[in-house]
Image (tube, rainbow, N blue to C red; front, side, top):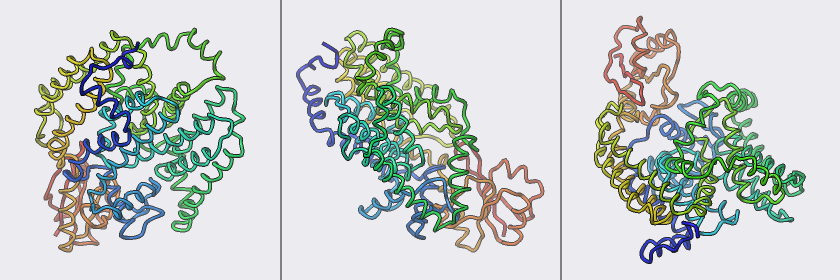
Length: 548
């Protein structure tokens, strides 16, 4: 009998496991709520995406920029609008105000992502115990739960991709594909309108490779698949038509498709990383579960004998093979892109969690104890490192709560050592509870103390105060739009010193934000400029200067 199937000692842990497994939706709601309710409005919006998205949302609500977003008074083609429509629904249906709307959007996106993983697990036929293990792993992944507190569209985007995968598998699990291809492509289209073409490329890639492996690629060309594809193309065409009506065809071809789709995939102008990037980044982001590779017979998985068995039974390939293809195809495709961003890995989390949970059911007690000992060691190392070197972290502001956070990490590691032989169910329950407990000092103390190091709020509000006194706001070579939300006013931006000098002469009274290194390089500054503030934010020092 496997360690996951062994009966837990009679008591609270056993009753809790089966109660949570029997009420999965309540489990997910309670889990996300416990991890996020206390952080819905206890810090400022941070550099760089949160403040930029906040300004884009401001413009959607205040200036009707529903089809093509606007940032700092200019068209913002980087992102499609669906996530911002989602924020508008939250803003409309709840009493929350900005910036609470943004933090609530992040939490609800996290819940949606968990729900999509659970739906995938059930569609693939996993029992409730494995499904609960998957959910608890996701609730215990440091990187993922951190995103529950940071407002961006990637959790919603990844959740839609995962649901599209689930619907495509459902369509292929029987002879009659039914309405599932239409739903799958509609979800893929919605994902595309949330962040971009990966929304439909990843599900299509997975299902194509899966059918090729099974020798059934002809099923991809069914009537139902065609109708689904037509539905998705209609959705995308409706948005494209809106873009052309608002900004014109040249904006669509040159800016949206040319610069922000094709160029980013083939020759990106930022986030350029080597092919090896995800080989390093993914194991770090998947902690602590990437430690599972230390206790499973990885060599056996990739042996010629194993591959021979897989090839012989390929026509009967089912959920496990689908998950491996979903993970592997996404990993290889993302690695082939010119631009690589850590957040892109999210669609791989549900298949990794399910494969890990499935493997846990086959572990004997010795290997299970070894894995949880490794997890305990990680928590202990992180706790000791935080206590010993926390004051050496390169932040320009004093951090509150590091000592408490470090002590809690040590406590969690010690409890793991005590529980490591009690089986994976007990340890998984403790994992989710431990991460939730640890988030409280981090969310209530550490994160808010980082505001002056991570948020443009202070300087943005100073700019806004000067604008209300009659100063013209200017910016030189800053990340576009990062000060606009808190300044409550569009800021004229330039990247040329001569143009900047001309703007200063023309505007008269100005308030200027500029990076310190550019300020030092600017040797022929117009007379009368004086520095009134410096802020070290996200590793860069910003200077605020005024001219009377």
